[in-house]
Image 1 (cartoon, rainbow, N blue to C red):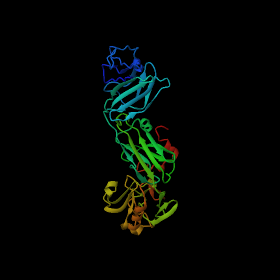
Image 2: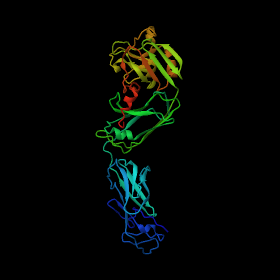
Image 3: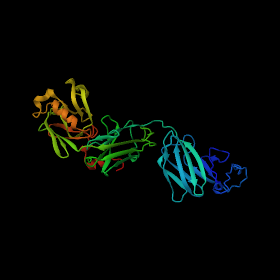
Image 4: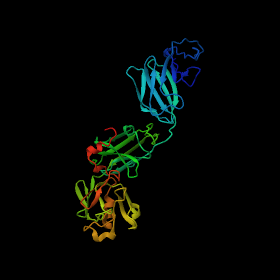
Length: 400
C-alpha cells in the first residue's frame, strides 16, 4: 500500500529551511514511509530509504514577501502536480516547466495570507509545506463603474477610481482584463479624476453596439500599487450590458435638443443652455449621462457661482462632475428655443425634461455642438474620454 507523508507529522518528514523532503521510497509498492531516522511503517516493519529527494519553495517562514510568484523546485525527478492554496480556499494556478523540475504560479502571493503547498512527483510521492506572507502596511482600494449587472448606454466606459495613488500603473493595468461578447476593440487610458484621484477608464474605439455584454476581471490581489499607494488585498469584478442605441444631440446655436434611437429621431424639443461669454456657459463636446438624479437641490455656491440660485430642480440628469445637468427649468421658459440663458445647464420644460428623463439611459452620449460654449468637456470631468482621439487615448495606456 502506498503511503503519503505530510509535513504536519514531523516524525515522518522534516522541513529544513523551507525545503520539504520527498522520499523516493514513497514510490515503492511496499509503501513504508521513512522517519528522520530512516525507519517506521504502519505495521511496524523496518524499511530502508534511498537518498532523499528535496523540493524547495522560494517563499518560506511566517513573513514571506508578497507580490512574488510562488516557485516550487524539485532537486531530483519530475514534478507531476503542485497545489498552492490560501487558507481561505483560493488556489494559485501555475505550470510545471518543460524539464519537470520547477512549478511557477501564474499569479503572485497576496499579503497577509497563509498558504499550503502540496507537491507530487511522477513516481507518486507527495509532500506538503507551508508559508505565510507579511501583512500589507497600507491597503489600496477602488471604486468601479458601472455597477454590477446594470444596463447602460452606448457611451458608458469602464471606470476605476483608486483610493490611493497608483505609481506602478503598468503592474495594475496588467491585472485588468476586459471581455466582451463580440470582441469589441478598446483600450485602457490613465487620467486624473475630477476628485484629483488616479483613475483608469476602458473605452471602445467607437460607441458600444447595443446588446454587448461586458465583463471586467480585476485580478489585483497581491499587486503593489507603489509608494504611498499600498497593496491590493482582493480581486474585483463587474459585468454589465449595453442597452438601447441612443444619442442625445444638443445644438447650442439652434437651442434644440434631440434624442435619436437606432438612428431615428424620437424627441426634438426647444431648450436653453448656459449663458455664453463666461463661467455660466455650457461645455461642448461629448458628455455621458452619469446619473439620473431626479429632484435635487441645486445651489450656485457648489459650482462657484456665488448665491445666484438655490432651488429644487426636477428631472435632473448629471452630465459632468463640475455641475452641468440636463433638467426641467420652467422659470427659463421665455428662452427655450430662442437663446442660451442658464447658469450652464441644459434646461427644458417640465414635460420635455420628464420625457427625456424617462427615455434616457445612464451611459447615453450627449453630443453638444455650437459656438456658445466655454470649452470642451475634460476627460476626467465625468466621462469625457470621447473627446480624445483614438490614437491619443491608446497612448494613455501604461502598456502601450
